[in-house]
Amino acid sequence: MDWLQAIVGGLISTSTVIAVTVFVSREWFTRLINRGFERFKHDLQIEAMTRELTLKSQIEFKERQLSEFYGPIYSRLKRGRALVRLWKDGKLAEINQQFWELARKTNTEIEDIILTKSHLIDGDEIPKSFIQFLTHVPIWHGFMETSHGSVPFSQEDFPEAYYTEEFEKDIYSTTEKLKKDLKMLYLRFGVIESVGSSVLAEQ
Image 1 (cartoon, rainbow, N blue to C red):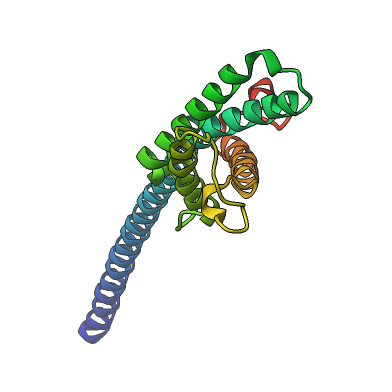
Image 2: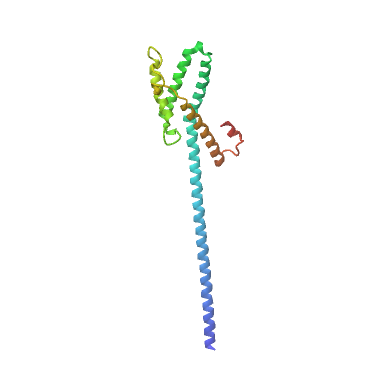
């Protein structure tokens, strides 16, 4: 019966080894899964943080574009357009000199914004209308200080000396686009809850 005991003992030993192996394998696999899950969770957290930082950076940049560049130019152009309309209607005849002084001052302010904050211009290049405006301002101002007080050439002969409405159109369209983009970013970032919120209404 020794051989039977040997076989039984061998079977028990084999079962024990198998059980231990299964247990160890299961523990190893569980730890591997846990480590993989933790790594995955960590990667997700990093990705979420990166996305959040990117979103925050986009918001901050667009806010700067609107508050430091497009907004100030937009409001000056809107005021200028309203004053020009009144001037053309003959309602500013008694303050004609002040009107032109304000026009020159406004041009200089806009020129300064473009020259000092061009890094906030939307897009990869400075629009042609911006270059036209920057060229027009010093030429026009210079001729206003001459004895005849105006540009002695027609717009056809000397287009660089004249203002074009393309500049206004570019500023208006970009400003309004940036405002819409910023509203959508506010929604995604949770700054506002819906398009109808009071915060959005003020934008």
